[in-house]
Image (tube, rainbow, N blue to C red; front, side):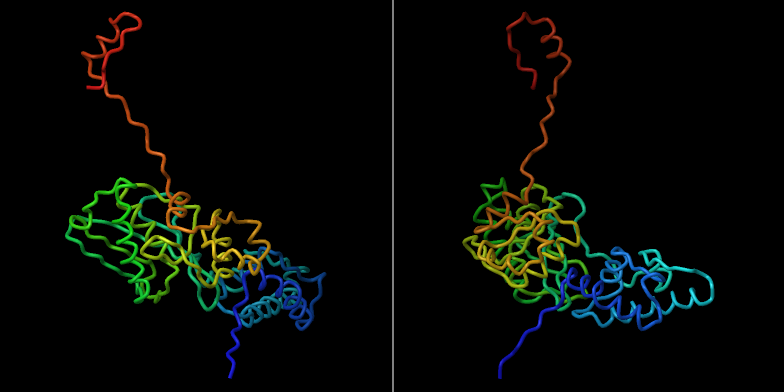
Length: 318
């Protein structure tokens, strides 16, 4: 027997299906027409993003039918002559949002990285947090991480040891520091090799003190030598990044041909960076600019500078 895999619809595909087929169908079945009810694009995205979590569009169609019935009642009873369905109208008819936005790192900071994950109902952002504390070579992993992700974490730590000098990290950090890696939403199981680059970036950022750009998301498997290997689910992962407002997505170079499957709107809205090694990832994701050092001048040295003749250089930093 052959196994036929049917991927979930993307956000844009659900939007087009709803706009072209589901809305006209439900409007007609509920005795309405285009002069009586109109759905804005924002309302459809509101339904897709915050009221459904599904691979298909069955729940979406049921919600559209509910809105049409309630709008028809208002029109029949004279409460309204015409209904324009906006995000505010959706909340009025269906109640508060059923689902929250994906978690993400909103500001550039040390040790927090936006990863990308595949799910059965599409892609999602998967932020990872890394924190180091005084200790003795312990790695703590929390957030319902699977065995493959735990192995990726060990690989990331070993790789960090091999490039410690390059990023200003103490070469014996593993003897003095404990590293804790956490994936929020701990009740949701997470596994897979594609978090390798995210783990390595978070660990190097935490130990070096370099911030990670909040407008960057990444995916890719890594090897002990720092190579970035291809991953699956690129179509869903890039849609999640686009939906969350991410500007730059780092993907393995080997996944470049898979961009043909990515929605055109997503490709136009994202800047893709292709990585062959983890160094390619770090060059983009880490903020290497260090704050300028302030010049400390003691009062005695300042007076000497004031009295010194032109052209004489004094050391006022001691």
